[in-house]
Length: 227
Ligand SMILES: C[S@@+](CC[C@H](N)C(=O)[O-])C[C@H]1O[C@@H](n2cnc3c(N)ncnc32)[C@H](O)[C@@H]1O
Image 1 (cartoon, helix red, strand yellow):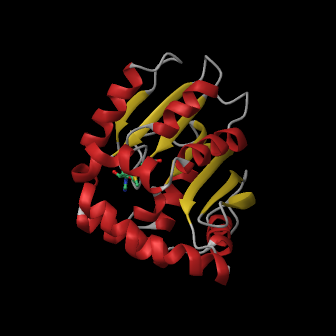
Image 2 (cartoon, protein in one colour):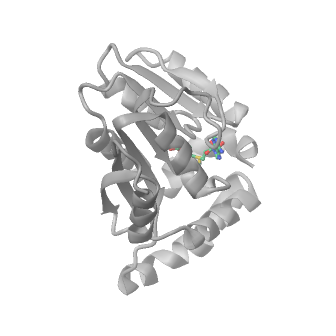
Image 3 (tube, protein in one colour):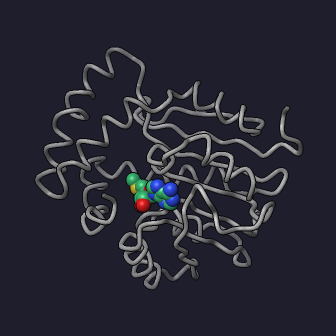
């Protein structure tokens, strides 16, 4: 599915969110990246926007990896990366549920609009936890449900009906039908924070973005896994 939407993916992101997706990714970088970070992985990087935003703000000595299991997405990321003057990103094909990375080797993992699509949310969190060093950080940027009746009354007609039609017109019908359905079935903000804690992340904090249309969750790997 992601291979089929890759060529129009950026266009639709900008169009369907009126450019807000760029601001969300920049906020994730500002909140998650620490000056001392030297090994950063943007998982499910797609066409690479978040990995490139990380590259622009990270220390020059920091290695930034963009990882995804969809080759057509990575090819677009690679092309965009070649035009990026901020330095290079390493684009790597890899599955979020079986990361090709040693345990304890990463300072920061980011994942934007990706974890919702993984076969197992817990499995992905466990794998991310494994590759982070103790004290390492995870930042999850994901669509969410506003939870406010007024906002939902205004937003859902667009999200559930207009967005899939625009997606079908410009890109792929089933992918953009799947998007709102997957958001409706994904854990809410508090529940996601609870699951992150259960999987060994501490200091888990989250904020609602754009009236709760999206959310940013950040957690740090505790030195010891809770039993
Ligand atoms: C909606 S796109 C998000 C892309 C990008 N992070 C962004 O901010 O626009 C979801 C991406 O997750 C990737 N993905 C889904 N499951 C994955 C997995 N198990 N391992 C690696 N990538 C995965 C897909 O290939 C796709 O590129």
